[in-house]
Length: 198
Image 1 (cartoon, one colour):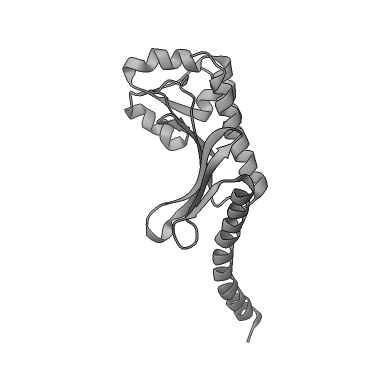
Image 2: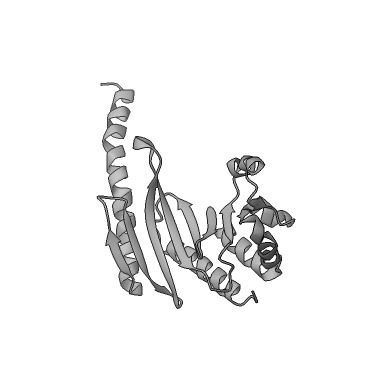
């Protein structure tokens, strides 16, 4: 048997082991972290579907895995969500800016830019046209912009919708330090937004 065949057989045997080990390891890390912090841990599916929720630094937070994509091309994402303070306008919807989102702006009159280069590069702001002035006034506060940009630096994607702040990571988060980094970033942002006058 030649070396390329041996390598192909080894890869064929080890790859499935990796795809089973990775979510099992992540689940173990999440469950241990949840037990240590007094969070509720729940598993929904066979391998990659689980969540934990509880209080972190005095705020209700939820961290979960979700699957997106068609059929066999599904990707796993890790999301962390925390409720926003009541001082944040209900009408505010904020999305991570992507090339596709920029293209969509041509067709969508519910989006606007803030004229803050860093913020406009990072986020797409959406709201009803009747609420645009109020949302613009709220977002033009330096403290609001700084808080949202700070959490965006930590995450791959950040969303504000339905009175919640959500951070999203493509893939499974499988380390305690990353869990804590994400939750700390979210809660720090919410606390900064809570300190701002509406």
